[in-house]
Image (tube, rainbow, N blue to C red; front, top):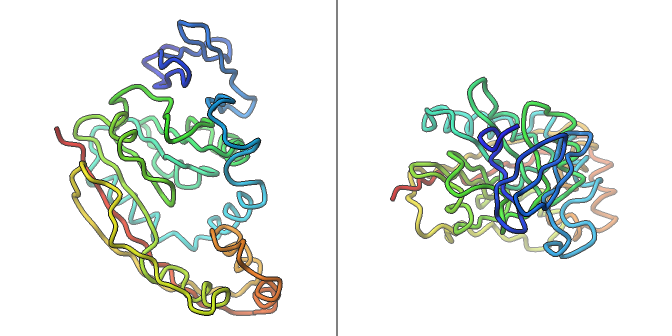
Length: 272
């Protein structure tokens, strides 16, 4: 497979990577083997900050089970409507911080190439095994293994937003779509954990140079009838580590629970 088919570059020397016999190799002979699931690990040891960075198996499986139930379907529908409206050229798509690939594969059509990258090997392994029509890699968002200006669309859904690196790999007139928590996101769940739960701060915009095209808040109510779904929701949130055993037992005992989903969606354009 030639360079034109895959936009990867070497995370060590930034040379082009070419896939041959299930091994990605650059001109300086840095090699990265393709796993049997189809993904490639482009996270060199020197770029790791722990032995197993990113979400662990329990967190990944909880998020996968929750998302498969369709609780975030309104978000997915909104994101795809943005993509269909603004991206007309079937350029390459990157899901930056793709997790288990649930959002990533939604963007695949007959004409485009879709990539997902995450620092969690556990998540990428699941993604690659499940969504064979997308390209997945293990890597860090601070040093994306992609050529300059090679991507027409980047998603950042509940992941770190790194403008400088995103701008490097984004083509001129390409788009960055970000999803972050709006004020009331999961406030009812947070109220079980914190005595005085704070609303999310939405005032700060992490993007300074890209052009803001559109901003939207998406709010709706989720109704849960099974404790398993509530536990999975808790497990995929950052404040799961703050939840006491009493809180977990309270959720397990509930037969019904209502909670708000509240998202802030921003679409940016790179226009030189």
